Image 1 (cartoon, helix red, strand yellow):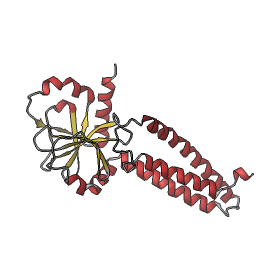
Image 2 (cartoon, helix red, strand yellow; image 1 turned 90 degrees about the vertical axis):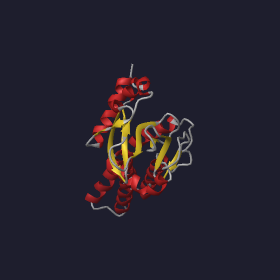
Image 3 (cartoon, helix red, strand yellow; image 1 turned 135 degrees about the vertical axis):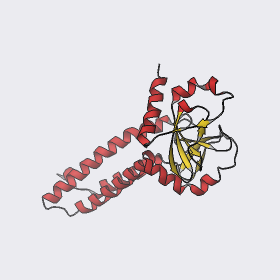
Image 4 (spheres, helix red, strand yellow; image 1 turned 180 degrees about the vertical axis):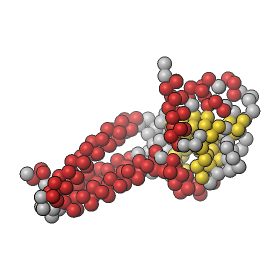
Length: 234
């Protein structure tokens, strides 16, 4: 029966692992700006997330069972740690994968993003506030495009870019390959259709920029990116 008793020690270990899991996928790790391939870390973190989820559900079930049986001396502490870790994990995931999360990260990065203005093209991966920038490009005049990456090394780009265009939708040399959605502070999120982008490589040379097409929802932009990736598969 000991294994079916709420254990603050076990819950503390779970809490520490969840916090480590969140940190390992953030832009604040020491290796975030490196280009060394760490796809093994991405895969490990991916599957560890499921293991931690099932472990947390089991711990919560044991604690709630003991509460209902009236033997809840340590169940409250366990449930508090589970709630804390769960809140941190859900918040971190929302910050990374939702439109609201991106808007908040862009707002929190406003000072760092201002330093990107006026700089030239760059292939130096760097952290800019709460964002990880793989490259900086200027395909249409002086408006920078900051291509966003993930902290797992080279080749882990997102096909997303922050584009500074305070007076309206950004211009693009390839309207078929990009969609745009406003974020805040004059920044827009660009969604790249990989297959259309590659088809337009020759056409774009010497082509003038045109106003980009906007999307109403972040999910519409992500679907545009996913369609481009699917179309690129053999």
